[in-house]
Length: 233
Image (tube, rainbow, N blue to C red; front, top):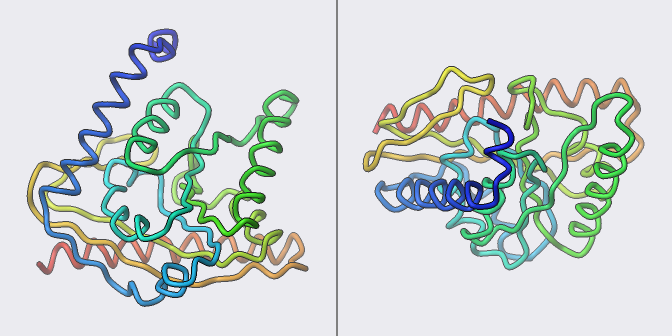
């Protein structure tokens, strides 16, 4: 299966299919955006930012696009894995080119170097005024726990962090590690926003651990607000 997924033709087909699903999800429903005012300073002034949403919401993520299309410089961090390749292709079609990175396993020096290079690229992007969108529990989990990379990038660049929740109805949630959700055509959609949050430049390991737990809980709560909006409507 992995060999099949690495085939360029298969990757191109899957990328096109995911892009089509993203477009249908966006276009076939009316979207509600909650607390969008919190991110307006980034949209209006062109300031850099780090924006987070959970990995399981990737098939819904174009619901965020009309907001971020207001900015010229937006990129996404995507895993270099086989499934990450077609996700990167789909997001590129939607106007969000990828920076490819992943967390390296202990002892894997090649992946560790690649991860460091990608984080450096992401930091340069933010320092030049760009927005970086990350699914901070991907690509391997654990689900709904923010990995260290995105918070380290925010700490080193001083960029504010924004939290984004997505929900649609009707939808189907698969029994995967991230509970990935796909939208049926038509229906309702909602995004919820929270922030800005800042990571202190002098944050030590204990402070980073506490911030990780706090922001992980807040990001899940932000998605729950989007789900509540869809349910009420």
